[in-house]
Image (cartoon, rainbow, N blue to C red; front, side):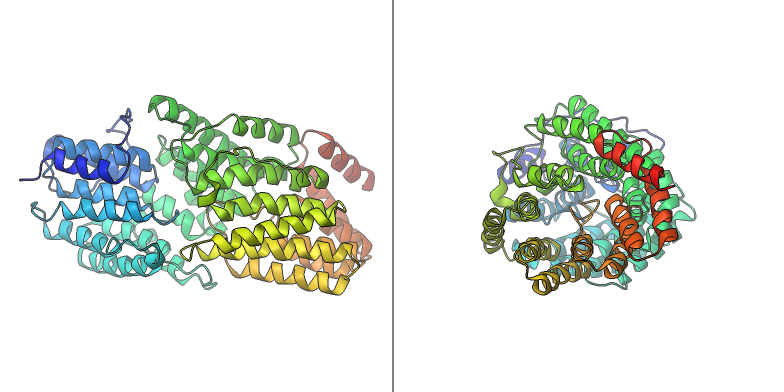
Length: 538
């Protein structure tokens, strides 16, 4: 027990900012996850609460809990493990070099401490992930960690359900975004379903099941988990939001709106209660999903108000990829979903002072909206400028950038190029470029940070086919979009138009009825136009 708290905190503060003193929620909530450990009885409730926060990705709170626990009991080896898990944040952006060094330093402090064989297995598995600070080796380290956790699971699952839950998370964190068989996700879901049989409200189980099935054609398998997760983790803004991943996948817009309204309120309350230095970043993540659902139901006036609320957030507790993504995507969505092309071409960044150099893939969204808006409003030279801007960003992206982001940036280039070529009368080349963008985008599953691509490349291909008098081809592409994104409004509108022009009035009417139902609570000119269009066609 020779390790003292000052040694730990000096390492923690040397490698990153010291944690802000925050007010934890009640540690004896009904949703607390049991995790056997060798810490003293005095800190058991605190430790279990930290594990519960880890399972809902409430990393600022988890960091605070485990930091305070180490201060109170520096001989608790698993508290250092918990702090290191809070740094990794599986399923989010890879840790920075400094964060990797910080995690390794935390785990190194456990060497002289007493720990059970099971606890040492957890620590050693995590040390595999923190073996090296090169971001370019992230996937290899994530795979190695998953292999190590497989051993922990095999050795201890009969006595320790948490080994199964954390192994399932490791499988998700090391999955291949190009694997359309979803082998890792199905394996994860199988492990989780076993735990769920006797722990039906375990927040980690429900949370990770949502992530396991957050894909087209699979989302319905997680609907029951989505419907229960928010209730199982009432203190978590992320838990309030996560059900909307499944609701979005299934086109259940009213449920998604409710989920994200709850989450944004919870994030605002946590910001105040925890005395954070800026708005809790989880709130911005929910804002993007909320914006998407509002626009799918033509709640344009509410979306405009939401955009003003976002613009009023001039600082967040951490300036990370989720924050940058939302600052870029929300205004882009607001213009592009409304087909306000001139407005899109003139977009300005909400946060000029954000660290955009660190998130080139997010900044590409801004230039994509401007370029597509310019191309579709006849401003071809401005569109070319935006293509050049995106290519410049592409050249600055580090090798460690996730595959999804790399592919999305190329999709942006190809999609704008297609509409530039179309404006020049080069229809065949335009369609080739549009199809290349669509196929590339569909080859890699979306990152969970986004409810959907800012404007699906396949939908843009369908728009181009419809514009070039190929309604049958356009209808097929719109229907492909709707298979992946049920009840996506602009795909429904396009499919209705394409079906009508293809001589299929019954199908066109079917889509019109769906539109009429979906925009019934809409607001603004677009909702009025859509309602009038649908009613006139009856």
